[in-house]
Length: 434
Image (tube, rainbow, N blue to C red; front, side, top):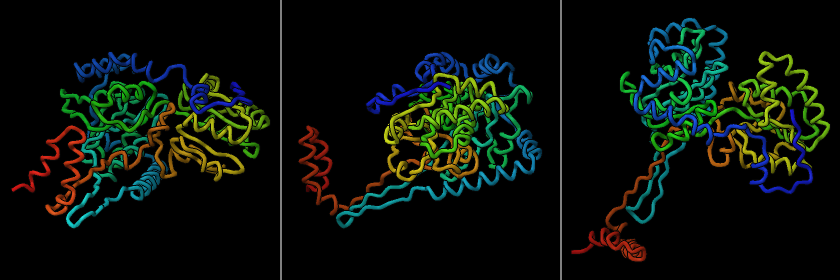
């Protein structure tokens, strides 16, 4: 794993962001590659999805929709201990979602003048659940539960089929959908799935959705970028990344274990440590050598750790580490310092922040109650992680009486004329002319 030595460098956030370890293929390049596939799905619908599945997954799907019998069988076959873990995750994510619900408000002015704000759920949502190198029933929980708490009426899960299951989605993914009462499941993956949700597939009766959410690889993130405007998106939640901000008090084994935990997702996963301690970097290197060779997905982990998107970053001091973290805007940011609360107060850009030795990213992936669908690639500077708020649209309702409008009529007329829009003022004054 390479070392990036930034000691002595006085860099702006923009310069830090440019120096930060990133994958060779960025979303803009991926978008160019998948543009023809998106257009193919728009024009040819189900036929294009089947062709894409044959090309990228190596099989022809027997059906693009999952039957209720398949879902019921998956729920029946679910291991009891796994079911308990899933139900615990559902309960905790639901609790956080309920507590996070936005509350309506009312602002009163003159007698009879009122502006209120209400929150209305999106009507139809497509929920993407990845299924490439791993199986992600946890992503079903993270997508579905906040949408249900928000009150979304129509939910469609899109998830790829798996060769080992006869081209059908992984049974555990189907089982979680069944436990949550979602029966509309599209068998499609990657960019083709996102396009299917955005455009609909008329041949199989799949209507377009209003919003697409969920994590995926860089091609999923690129498809969401291309289709934004045709459909709403949560964020560009692409290939996973972890940044650990640590000082010499950090436990090197914990640091190495957490870097490996995210590296096992994908060859292109980003694993970064930023610290002012040369000793910690040395110790983490030793732990990585030992642990990466022992882990189940050793080859994948070592490719991710050795890629240009991963690095051990050495800086002058803790303030420089904080600046680097803010410049990087990580999907997952872990704080392992002797001053975690002070550091936390200076962090402004991150998808989710994990504070202390006993709050690893893996906790958030499954059981914390937080959501693991988070912005990647630096987009945490302007995007937030998936939550119940993602599925709610704030609407302002304006209600003024005659007397309340009359108080403002002359000022509105003045403002309108100043903008060269006199008819705006006339629309108000007309209500008070005889």
